[in-house]
Image (cartoon, rainbow, N blue to C red; front, side):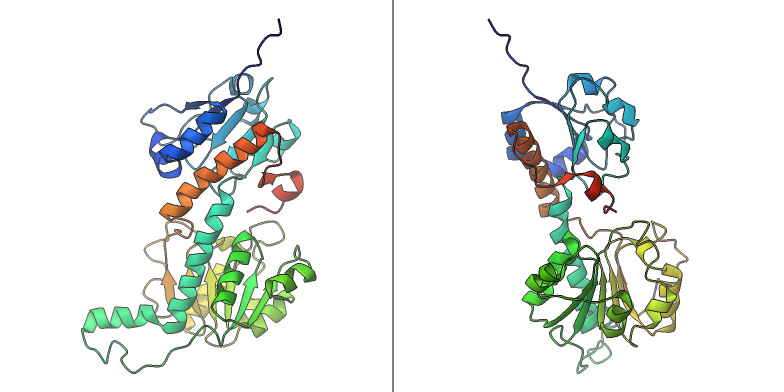
Length: 340
């Protein structure tokens, strides 16, 4: 008699508190329908540990922000085949060497977050164009209708030339959103996008200098790599027209924040920023109190809907893997080099 094959086993190295935000009951039920699922216990710690021996006892590891760091050697064993990350970039937990150890990686939570991040980028764009933040602050402070901005004229998005740095998943979502609002001139810089792909998106590809010179709104959606770190320097920022808007919901390291801060303090540029070199943003930052800046505390991907979609996306990846079908968001060596 042939021995029965062991059923797939999945270990979820996520704290119970975060698990509740990412995985609702129907999503966990879907996961349990395809595998035996073991959840990290409640320990009172802020992070859930990856247990020793996991690579010999489980087929799949699921991680997220609350997963404690672990040694790559822990993933080497007789059984573990796949690790799926529920959050954004997985580089903080999984160095590239993991791929050479025979474990496949998937970034199940990244795509669901893209729409949420693009939504905030669009929101910041619209707030700054219509000067909503300034009017709200003045009206709340003075309770005076005219001081609050009654009669002022602001700007509509359709007439703007929108420039996008990086046609990542988020960049493509943002491009689709602004095009959907009627913007005709959408420019982008992305070395990985072909002219045919750009044409299909309704986007004109240009070099970075042209992008800065021609954009009324410059939205940053590029990952941080050796090539992109600090690429928007003082010289490129100086090419932006007076009054141009910079929106960054991606990574602070893509832009020279000292140079951008100087431009904002001078009043020449406007900005909507969700990411900063130092987080939390220090209390003495010169960015606080500027009329021409809207600041949010790194919350772009944080919607209820996005979080639940992240968990659902991970279950989709695990289900596909166990069924022997292609995963949608597998991270290969080529993809890994382009991640934030």
